[in-house]
Amino acid sequence: MRLLDRLITRALRGPLDALVAEQVARQVQELKLDALYSCRWHGDRSRLHIPDTAVVNNALFNMSGGTITIGEYAFFGHDVAVLTGTHDIEQFGRARQLAFPRSGRDVVIGDGVWLASDVLVLGPVTIGEHAVVAGGSLVREDVEPYTVVAGRPAKVIKKITPPTA
Image 1: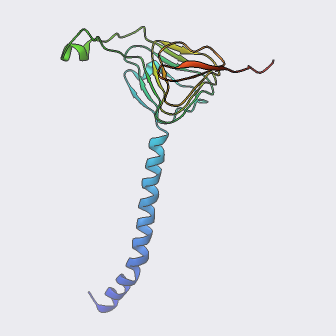
Image 2: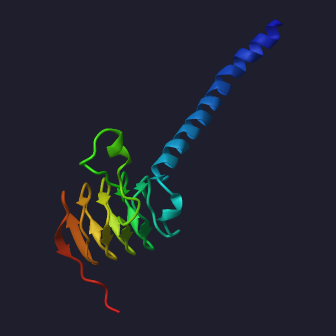
């Protein structure tokens, strides 16, 4: 390589490396953000019903034991898990892995429900419209509409006054 070519290559390498590094950093950041706003699911995807108005972030949905239906304008914090599956504790080894109900453990999350971060919902359960589930809570029983629940297991801590018509 001629001397002039080497000098030009060196002169361009710094800005070019910086440009490439900037582009790579941007793409990595986009992938991280995508992961925060992409839900995951296990089971038959057709058993999961999420309207376009709902925000589920990076929730995990398991439909192995039933369907999951989410209402309009429901929204989730990060790392929420909604599970319809369970396993037979009287079974052992491979039999326990395979022993789970295929239906009957449906989860319904009503319109406007807010599930804060790290909530775990175990079906069968219905969370009524505009209910709020505090962060880190475990929902194992139905939650009435316009109710705030918290804890492991979740217990009622407050009723919300619905708007007047």
